[in-house]
Image 1 (tube, rainbow, N blue to C red):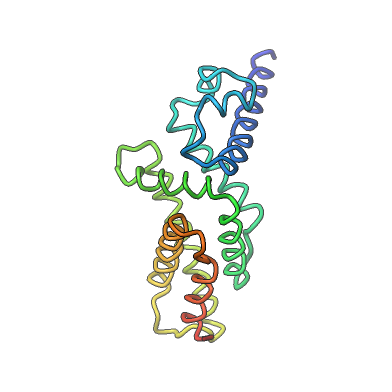
Image 2: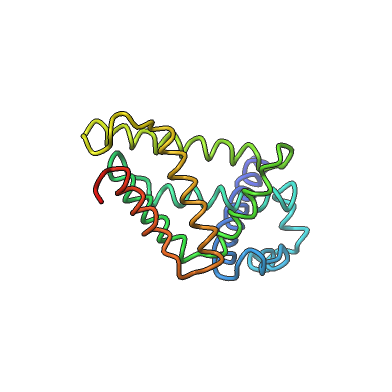
Length: 192
């Protein structure tokens, strides 16, 4: 019985670490947040915090996974509403630049197949492309998107545009990421 209670406490502490880390990184930025600072925010030593994760890389990977969980709960909508949810998420990202920096840094590092987050990003991109392709098919059935266009290609281009606009925004915060994606979507749906 003690082992089960101990396990539950460990799971709860890990969740506290991830939730707190989301807030600290969103506020301070990825580069200006140290593992020591994250540990202090949850009342642990640096070694104590890393007890809950196999490495610093896993910690940051799990922070992004927690961000995705939180975002999915807030912005996941069905069918044609999915583009509105995506635009809302992009607007939200402009409010949490530190998490955007973390995502950009880790996604680049994870392009190496041996990186601990490689499979996470491969699966994440595949899931998002699939979701957008379903949206395009829905819009094609409704007559809003040319039926001759390839939903998978449009999906990949939407995701590439979002990541590219995000990078440009990190360099120039005056860029409106959501407006760029909204414009691209209007082009795709012939609503210019």
